[in-house]
Image (cartoon, rainbow, N blue to C red):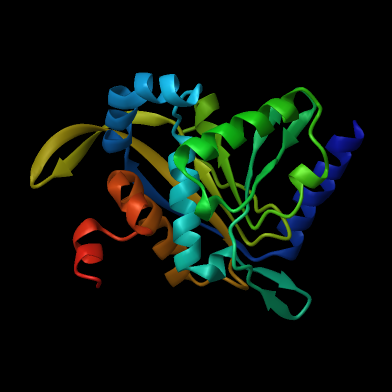
Length: 235
């Protein structure tokens, strides 16, 4: 075993032994995001020089949901609960040497283009073996995407000392009831694994619902996670 694999093995076992890990699930209709990508991909590439992916939407939605539900962004330090006032998201990247988790800082303040740019840079450095320990340290939350390998559903393991991790999965056409009618929609199952010692069901389920709403209504990302009418009425 390589040193990286040994270290990863130790961390994974400690998570199972030292946390009260629980996973909750939901499903997300990806129609709106897929429509945006289809309509604006060429213009996005022309202006920013990189493609618009799904990950940036989930990173931004997660950051706003974490700001609204800070307990999910918290961690346990001995007998204290530490709650950062920022969101630094670790993104799981598969590399030839194993799984690495570069950190995108202050995601709550970044645009989608900025997130995509930073993600591309850090993922490239991780895969080429040029990423530093500093660039993989200090995250407050993690996102992993097993969907790129075809995973339908999983229970991702928490990345300590963090208290929660979001798992994305593949997108599959599924029958969905819309306004009482059956439609075929592109659906992704999402999973949130969390440390139940710190995070209760209300916040864990609420977090996933917040992310679901923002992905299904991407305009909410412009209003801090609120819908347009609520923002207009200052509710």
